[in-house]
Length: 310
Image 1 (cartoon, one colour):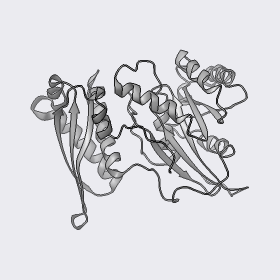
Image 2 (tube, rainbow, N blue to C red):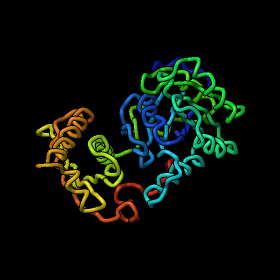
Image 3 (cartoon, rainbow, N blue to C red):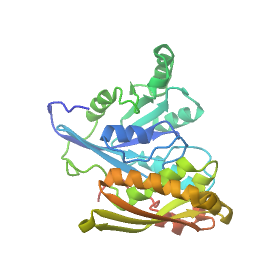
């Protein structure tokens, strides 16, 4: 995405990405920022925390806040917490991107979110994502329906996966942001620590390599994160937590095969991101009922923290 010549005062603001699970919020954040910061898997409810992605242009700094998908099946403390995080972002940002899935069309969950957004004074932009999966004649009714749910608001069709029409989306976003200086250095892409990013990369591979309920019952916690500049080496030790003893052998696999596969894929991802060799050690712990334990959620970085700097 190219940056155009500055026009008018400099603008800077926070933008929440809101929508149902699996509509492509994390993929869009990665595409807009130009770096894979948020983990992306085919499974819904992959995102558990707020993740900031920072896009600095000559005329504006856009600080995107990726949020967990808003859904109604929020039984555990973890699930309730993720939904609260997403809804809380609506009150703390300067603009909202409301994403829907072009292929699935507008469903009941989208209508409920749109109803929540209708009372916001914050600028809201509707985004119809995954337009690459739908022929144009079938796309027009989806655009019209979303425009009807968001009267007076802009609606922009995009393909986050193929970087289609995202430059127009950026242009549309800049104007509603408040006038003000950049809040982050121009070369900064996220507020997340390297340790937390590594933790998420390991969890991404847990989602890819386990099935059914197992991914949602697992969490990764970095227990060692040591850089050894003399050897151009990063040493990472991480515990994979499961809720029940019966889940531990599933994650490990026969003869340790699945855990080895998870570790190899995560190591490749870590090495590509950090640009150095990585020694990664994984082990599995049983932490009964961790998804309902506030202390455990805090340890995982799932405490509710405001998006704005003090």
